[in-house]
Amino acid sequence: MGLLSDPNRRRALTNLLTRLNTPICLVCYVAGLAWFMGLAFEPFTLRTYMSENAMGSTMVEERFPAGERALATGREFAAHKRKAGGMPVDWLVKTMQARGLEVYTQQFSRTLPFPDENKERYMVKGTNVYGILRAPRASRTEALVLTASCSEGSGNHQAVGLLLGLAQYFRNQVYWAKDIIFLVNEYDLIGMQAWLEGYHHTNITGMDYTPLQGRGGSIQAALSLELNSDVITSLDLVLEGLNGQLPNLDLANLFYAFCQKIDILCTIQGKLQRSDWDTPSGYTHAAQTMMLMVMKQASGRSWGDHGLFLRYHIEAATIKGINSFRQYKTDATTIGRLLEGMFRKLNNLLERLHQSYFFYLMPSLHHFVSIGYYMPAFGLLAVILLLKALDLWVQLGTPPPGTEDGVAGVEPASSPSVLSILTPLVISHMTGAALYTLPIRSQEMAVEHFPVSETEAVVLTAIAIYTAGLALPHNTHKFLVGEGTDKGWKVLKLVALLYLAVLLGCTALINFSLGFILAVTLVPIAAFVTPHRPKVISTTIMVLLSPGFTLLYCVFIYQELQESPVSLGEGWMLYLSVISQGILDHSLYGSLVYPLLALFVYPCWLLFWNILFWK
Image (cartoon, rainbow, N blue to C red; front, side, top):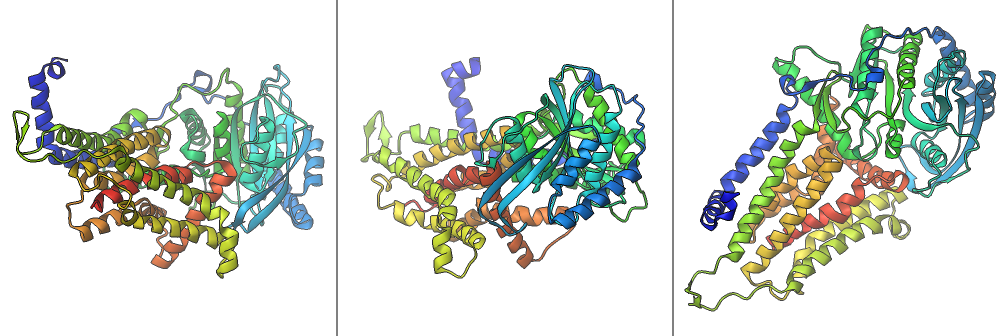
């Protein structure tokens, strides 16, 4: 404390930080990137372990015997689905009732704000079917959920068959202390959203649905099953949920523990675990796995039906069957025993999963990076903004050259007015508000005047508004009173630096991956942009590091990490698809990424764009 309370020492520290400001910022940036990439190195990570005592041992005997019968039921489901042209509701109700469940249905409908061209949807009407197995040994105040989606086409009927097979087997067991809900939802996430809103008596997305006639207890955990083949070579664990939420790490640990016990090949991000961590190829594999998780989490979308459960503080994950060219094969009976073991362990819970981590990254299923390990990487980037803000604060408080003993040798520069700072702030955020609201509202007018579809109209309108914001400096200067002073742009940059620091900090606390990616691209331009740098080079760098181009880079990087690189044309089409899906995810499920980028990140970037063209 003496360092800060002593005026001389405080002045010396301030002078040191301002004199070495640029070298310190460069060191912090490089150190932040190096720290992050070092997280994939196994000695720097923690080995997974079970924190919940009730799930600490896998010493249960799994006896599920009916894998082949479950696959036959799945084929029967597929035949009735083709015959009905959609969800075979009547057949599902009769089949669940024959297995001793309390069976209920829920109708729902949703009109999308514009057509989803990826899944060819616009007006969606469907039915969810669910059966409840009441707990015979408890007061029925808690529940577990097993769900399988009835998707379009011929996919996932194996999962529905296995769900029905497990329902019949679970019905004959007497040790259940929680209700078990077996749910078959139509139209994947839309149907799941309708069921969850009906179950919890909420309506936050404008969905039309009928009230649920039957409910179980408070849902403690949920598993979503995706199987698209009779032959499974490995099981992939999907954790990323809406807005980057993750389930409690113990749920992933439970899955990995039973895979090891039953000898099932398991993956995360579609990649196997490797033991050669001390080789370059081993490190590269772990880094790719971690980066895939970062990219998926930063997207803010739900990567499985489980992702919507997390909003209601329900720990959930999706188990996805993969049929690849590996020689290792897993039959349906083994997968059924895995699910049986997991449900028996979850049945032992006395309280919600809470003892392990909720914020983590996973380079592999047996190692993880906790929030205490990865947050310093973001902190090293964020401190650059504070150092630059401190430098500007000192410059603004320093008397101009030519003043001595309080007597001005030259006429001092006038201080900027409040209006000169508020004007770019207001106009930038009005541009962001237009980017957020106009693409959907103006789609009908765009379709009338241009030969484009509704989806193309929404995406192209968003790109047009984003591009039009680049003309903002040429219009803003007409309204500014004190723009001609150096103090004007310094005050605006000080405000913008603090704004960006708070914005990225809040984002990283909710969704670290999104906050870190934005920090990597926005911090350099925020730190070094001034009106005095060469305009052509500075303009090019700012555009290439803008939020729109950051999204484009992420599309190509994600495809490279998936080992399915695309051409420039294919990447551009994927980019347009990502924009439309981001807007749809916000409208349908409440994803926060699109409003965050449109209402806050883009206007903040425009402030620095204003500074570059300060007159």
